[in-house]
Image (cartoon, rainbow, N blue to C red; front, side, top):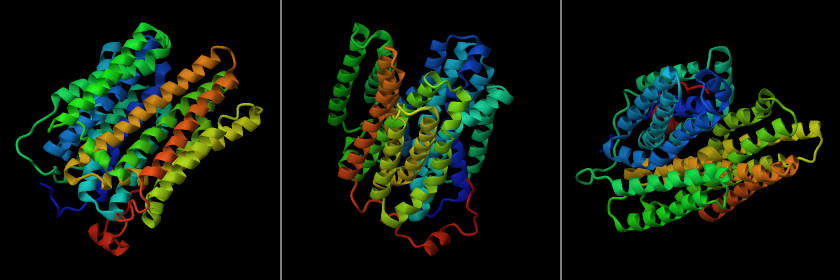
Length: 480
């Protein structure tokens, strides 16, 4: 049963942010230290790329199950399980001498993220209300959106000056700090409805479908899009999805409760989150193009996206304040629109070097600004519209939409860029790859317009400032 008398504290928020950062900042930093890891462990680039993608894959596959489990066995328990797994996964990477521990560590990090993300969102919903909940979700977003932005700089710097394994030593320290900071938070569960049951059949079908989908997305271009192997994995994905939908609709205990999508604001937040994360393909296309087509080195292309990092961190709290003033719908639309305009600017590859460099820098800044404005209103809309006994599951589906959207966006953009650049026209390839991302952005705006009602988010902001301050007396606001 819920412990209703406990009010969330800033100490709890800080612990949750540290927990979220262990995935977004440390686990994701692997992408930026590929040459160092390859040189140190002496493994092939193909093996390393698989090790990198395994974390997102395992996170995406198990996040809904872990969220549903958190509702039943306890959200704090699942957060602690996730942090413990993160320590084990990071230790595997610190001790790795070759590919075996590296791959095991990456899988464990994926499972850890699946436990931490929905459980921490559910804890925020359980112990914060109104404007305080929106503030807590802003800091959650800073940990995730901001953490992924900081990863390239932090990962690169740590790898350059201390060695790449230190990234994961820091990750262990952050996990231990997170455990200490949330130790006083009481356990939170959904309403108990008899003995604990779990949908193992649904999970098995879901995993097979997700693995097939990931192989199809990531290796389709290598196999050849019309090869038998690619067609086989596409068929497994489609059949798996149909079977999963049929089975889930006919059972009482299910992995994904599709009745959640009958709530239009929740559907709008989740679908637009999927589509807006699809824009992640821009990062791959723009970074590859400026390095291959314009002669930038990795550090210079990293500096181009500095505006993204600053803007996303600066705007998340602004998005929260806009949400409290006018509700969720408008800032979600504005955020998606600003992001889409920023992305579109990067497609102007016909411009000469200096002009294009300036445009890309501004484009990245708008990209971050838009995502920052969108983040808290969207997360709050999904959380506030979830039933109290299914917050973990609902948060799991919402975060799975992020992972899948990113995977789709990167794969489709990279495939379009690769197909056209193979013919030698890099400018055309970059423009076409960017257009794919603009389409994702436009579809995101349409989904918000149709599904999210005008008054979404206004109820949550109804508490007065006085009332909120009484809830958490005498605590300084945590700094970013």
